[in-house]
Image (cartoon, rainbow, N blue to C red; front, side, top):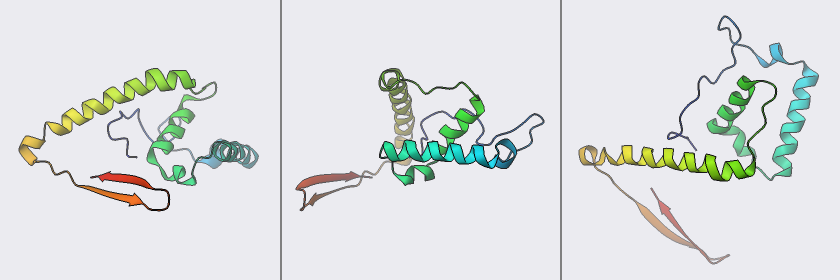
Length: 129
């Protein structure tokens, strides 16, 4: 997803003092990079995460945010994520929706929908655009 409704916490590049861009080869040795890659792959494989995740700007922003924090960062617990963080994201999304709705009087709004049924699994799907 685009994450348009979620606030941006800064730049998407790693910088060092003086504002110069750092490359991975300047930060890590090949052995360190390979070790990070192995941990990354294992986390994805063991949690059944799709490789498409790696194309997501939201995922890339997440990785950059962690790298900018530096050593000692630990992700929030599942409890914190499903309660406080999810609630905060819901509030941000609702504010984004209200902002979007406020433009409808000026620009209009079109809602398109389609319904189809998966004959193999007998599931119905509704698409809204």
